[in-house]
Each structure stands twice: as structure tokens, then as C-alpha cells.
Length: 258
Ligand SMILES: Nc1ncnc2c1ncn2[C@@H]1O[C@H](COP(=O)(O)OP(=O)(O)OP(=O)(O)O)[C@@H](O)[C@H]1O
Image 1 (cartoon, rainbow, N blue to C red):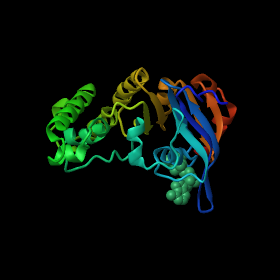
Image 2 (tube, rainbow, N blue to C red):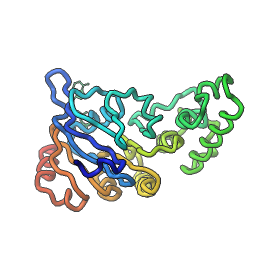
Image 3 (cartoon, rainbow, N blue to C red):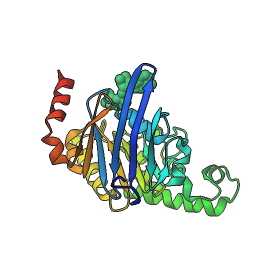
């Protein structure tokens, strides 16, 4: 019995993923306890994105198990995750360019609507009530990120940092229990990263966070627990101070820089 079994956490057990002859993940196991921030780090090509994509249903694992609160996640389609209380952000943000900021965030809040976002946005189904609820939820989420005033803007018209906030607001609008973040600090200024770190620390009151991130200072700063991947294997796992002092981790990163 592993530590999060029966306690509602995220459990990754012996997950392997191969792309043809490349073994991207080999028997990866890790846990994320409820209401904590768990970081996934590792040098380039270590398997971080593959693990993230396996969690999101974007990549099929060849073997292993992943569960959230005891419910299996492996083999689910990405669109099934919202119903299980799981939200994610992607590096590319994937905002719809021809929909307003508010409409983009309404898509994120979809699981809270009975008729679905499409019905609400297209005027079909239980339109009035759902649309009002979704819009209110979206505006709340935008307000949390200080961008409610941009509700009617189109994403391509916004600077990068603000688009990242909209993407986070979209993920949070669903009121997830598990939030998967893929390099949320990428491309942000030092000031924006500090603000983001503060927000992520605050998220753990409401949810469990899994953070794949290159920005080492931020990972050390916000994570309760860190798993380090190298060549598709977990080479270390523990609290930030233990990871900082781990010789295998230092060696893996030095090898990466060489
Ligand atoms: N679609 C794919 N087809 C073939 N090989 C792949 C594919 N995706 C990833 N790989 C390989 O799997 C390994 C792990 O890659 P992955 O992108 O998961 O690493 P990463 O830790 O996210 O790297 P980075 O920090 O550079 O983004 C690498 O050897 C990579 O070349």
C-alpha cells in the first residue's frame, strides 16, 4: 500500500512510455499528496513532457497505472478529465483566437454547466441560466488573476504574460481538485514569476498541484515535494532541501549543461 492510496492523492505507478525504439519513461512511480505542490523536474529530454502528457491523456502509456483519488486516469480522453476534477494548462496555452477572453474561460468552466459550453455559447439548450452561471464564473476567475477588464478582448491582442494569466484563469474556472501545470513560468519576467509563485503557493489551500517547470528557483520556492527525472527514470524524490543536496541530481544537471 502506497502513501496516498485511500487518501485522495495522485498516484503514478510503474508508468512506461515508448516512442518506437525510444524509452521516454521507464517504470516511473511518484505520488502527490492532497493539497500539496509537487514539482517534476529534470534535464532536457528527461521525460517530463511525456509524463505530463500521459497524465493528461495526450500520450498512451505502454504500462503502469495512474489514479487520482482512487479513480484510474490512464486511458481517459483529455476531455474526460474535467469531469474528474482535473484541469491542465499547456505550454502553448491553446487559447481560441477568435473567441473573447471571457468565452475562452467559459470553456474552462464547462464542467459546471449542465448543458455544456457549446450550448451556452451558441444559444442552444439551457442557455440563459447556464450562460449566466458560466460567464459569472469566468469573470470571477479572470478577476482572481487581475484581468477581468480584458474579458471582451481577443487573446491574440494581449501580451504574452496576460495570455498566460487567461490560460490559468481558464484552468481554475473549472474549480479543479487537481491542477496540472506545464511550464507556467516559461517566457515570464522575474516579476511575473514571483507573482505566479505566490499564486501557486495559494492554490494548495483549494487543490493539489503538479508542476512541470524548468525554472529551478521557482520549483524550489513553491514545491512541497519534487520528483527528478533523468533518462525517463525517477532518480530522486523528496522535499526541496533534499533535492538540492542530492548528488545524483547535481550530476544529472551538470551532465545536461556539459
Ligand atoms: N513523439 C515522440 N516521438 C519520439 N520520441 C519522443 C517523442 N516525444 C518525446 N520523445 C523522446 O522521449 C524522450 C523524453 O522527451 P520529453 O519531451 O518527455 O522530455 P522533457 O523532459 O520534457 O524534455 P524538455 O525539457 O527538453 O522539454 C526524449 O528522448 C525525446 O526525444
